[in-house]
Image (cartoon, rainbow, N blue to C red; front, side, top):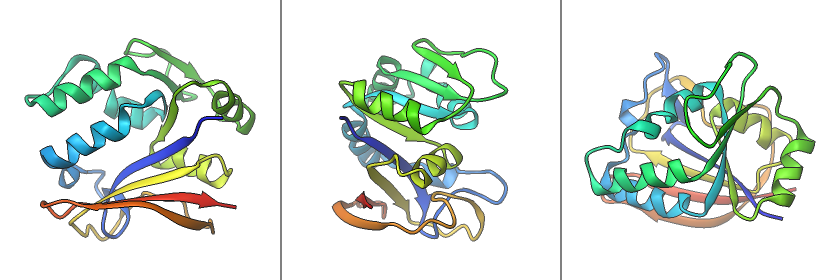
Length: 183
């Protein structure tokens, strides 16, 4: 069975967007982006909510200006994607299908059958998967900023023991934390 990871870039106080829905403060810079590329390379299937998909679909047609962003665009385009949405009618990227509901059974089947890592992204969808006990590893990249309010990276009302897996610090102040979730 393959693992399901949840990766998020968050402010030090735990938000992926500020109270105005902005996240420009979360730009990782080249060193962090190259590290993210290494994390994402084994992912063969991305699971997105509609809003996260609409943010990420940028990579379908754009590659960015640097070698590291061009590499990320290639990684993203090579992976399959499932978008969980009740409102999105059609996908605007290749290798993408729409599903209406996230179910524990469906994610379990994907984890059992996938030869590659699975990644779930988006605070709401990721939060549902964490709450349901489907996520095996949390990967948080903490930006050196406090935004005070906004959309939290992790769901409220959950209690889970974590086992530290990996850490890394970057010259630009970002910190990477990886944890395995324990029952």
